[in-house]
Each structure stands twice: as C-alpha cells, then as structure tokens.
Length: 355
Ligand code: NAD
Ligand code: DAU
Image (tube, rainbow, N blue to C red; front, side, top):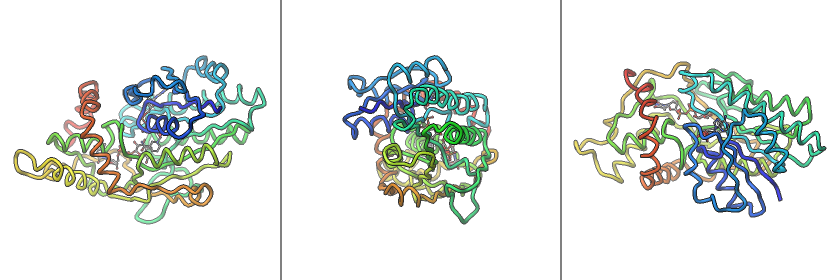
C-alpha cells in the first residue's frame, strides 16, 4: 500500500486532491500535513475524519524534526507538495512568509526525503511531486504560450518564491537523484477556494450586492482550470509521470478578468433575480487601482502532459463556473465562517481607498 504525504491538504486544491485520492485509490494511506494558516480549513475534510486510511497532522513544513519523523515513522513513499502561501496580493504586502514557507519549507521536505529515502535505498520506489504555478514563467503578450522549456521570469514575490522552490526541486533531482517531478499549472477555480481569489470574491460580493473590484482595465488574461481537472492531472503525474520532468497543466480556457466577472454577474442575476435596487449586478463593477507588477496574460501549452500521460481538461468554463457558483450558494455557512473572521481586516486593508 502506498503511503502518500500530502502537504497543505486543508487548502483549496489540497482538500480537493485529498478527497479525489481517497475516492479513487482504495489501497492508499494518506497523511495530510497542514499548518492551518488563514487559508487552511479542516472543515473542508471533516467528513473524512473517520476514514481509517486518512491521518491529519497539524504542523509546519518548516519544522525539521516533525517532517523528518513523519517521513521515517510513517513509511511515506510519495509526497504531493501543495503547502504554500499562495496569494499574489498578500506576497506584495508581506513577502516574508512566502520566502519562509515556499522556499525554506520546500527545502526542508526535500532534505527529509533525501535523508530517509536515499539513505534507505528507496530512491527508485518513491516519488516527490512538487505542485507549482505557471506564474514562474512571467507574463505573456497577446500571443504565445508557456511551454515546459520557457525561461523562468517570475515577477512577484509569490512567483519568485515558487520559482526558487522549483529550482531546488530540480537541483535535488540532478544532484542527488531524488525522484522529483514538478507540475506548473494555471489558475484553478471550484469548491473550497478562499474568497481572496478573484472568482470566489466576486461570487460572494455579487451575491450580497457589494462592489466588485476589478484591477486596472480588467483585460488581464488568465487560463482557468476546474480544480477537479487539476487533481486528476496530478494523480496521473504521480502514477505515470517521468521522474525529473516537469509538466505544464492548463485549462485551454483563456478569459479576460472582466469577462469572468460579467459572466458571474449574469449567472447570479439569472439565479437570484436583480438587486433590490432593480439594477443588474454588472452595475456593481468598479475598476480599481491595479496590482503592482500585474502580469498581463498567462496561457499554457499543455501538449506534453496530453501526449505523454493522456491528460486533458474535461470541464468547460461555462459548466464549471455554474457548478462553482452553485457550490458557493449551497455552502453559505462555509463562506460566512470565513468572512466573519480576520478576512474582514484583510479585505479593508486590501480594498479600502483603492478606487
Ligand atoms: P491555499 O492558499 O488555498 O492553501 C494552502 C494550504 O497550505 C493551506 O491549507 C495552508 O494552511 C497550508 N500551509 C501554508 N503554509 C504552510 C506551512 N508552513 N506548513 C504546512 N502547511 C502550510 O493554496 P491553493 O490555492 O490550494 O494552492 C496550493 C498549491 O498549488 C500552492 O503550492 C500553489 O502555489 C499551487 N498552485 C495554485 C494554483 C491556484 O490557482 N490556486 C494554481 C497553480 C498552482
Ligand atoms: O496562475 C496560477 C496562479 O493563479 C496561482 O499560482 C496562484 O496561487 C493563484 O492565486 C492565482 O494567481 P492570480 O493572481 O492569477 O489569481 P487571483 O485570483 O488573485 O487573480 C486573478 C486575476 O484577477 C488577476 O489578474 C488579478 C485579478 N483580480 C484579482 C482580485 C483578487 C482582480 O481584478 N480583482 C481582485 O479583487
């Protein structure tokens, strides 16, 4: 039986992945190591607590002793590493945590894997999947796509920290022969995403008739991927990917931010009716001060993972965004718990005086 260590399994993608693996891999033991930062929510997985195959450990990937113990005592033979500080805006206002978790935390996991796996001659039977981002490649103009061979050009503290971690992962493969693989994925959306990110923030605000902040001219482009498709891609990389390789993962679904916001407004008008003022929700849109160093366009060429592993996105954006909106409408308590806490202070610091 494979013993899989998932880091950051209480976050957005991590919790979707833990659920996916327990559903699809009956013969798995899964350990979820998560520090439960503001972005980690154990409620995302509360229904799995009684599953004997699942163990949750609250802890920090930067804690050397704890990480080493988990590797040696639990017989971990695979890692899927999600744990990170993930929000670009927060990395601009406070980069220190990004350097600590994303760089040092990744290094700490690599060191534990090197010591325990390679020390015991388990290099061939183990696998370390590092989950990274397309933001390491920088920003595209109107044409072109990010390929696995595109040069790194990170431009925010977040993407620079992820780029550093990617380089460390690659170095451990080349230098020590650690069996690592890296995935670089585009923007995810779907259930359990923290409402600091564009899509859940707009759904929440539009539902409650609050202003909808769109940075700059709203024409920045992101390539949206439904989170379940990302989880399936990672599980295929875990099973069939070639050690030492990187795989780009994308949604084939480029949209300008304003298109995404308009779409959410229109679907909510259709589902909930117009605002009490009889206006439609597009009337809530406000173009606000741009993000510093805002990358203009991301777009992924996912040919390699399609040709080598047979993965393609299955969910189209129009269906996925409707499912996502329905999930947020059906899970008002989940979102209410979040926006009642420290989120309020974050929101006012980020958005007040921004127009
Ligand atoms: P998230 O912010 O929702 O969740 C991060 C999780 O990591 C949380 O549960 C948090 O508690 C945990 N964590 C943070 N610091 C930790 C530490 N020091 N020790 C242990 N746990 C810690 O993030 P997400 O959006 O789910 O992203 C997960 C990963 O996927 C990240 O590595 C991110 O860079 C990458 N990624 C995200 C996207 C996206 O669109 N969200 C796209 C591509 C890649
Ligand atoms: O590309 C993958 C990356 O996607 C991941 O590595 C990151 O972890 C993830 O956070 C995401 O980064 P983005 O910065 O692209 O996502 P975000 O949801 O913050 O913003 C999406 C776009 O929407 C971006 O162009 C900025 C814009 N935006 C965002 C917010 C929060 C707005 O216009 N208004 C907003 O209020």
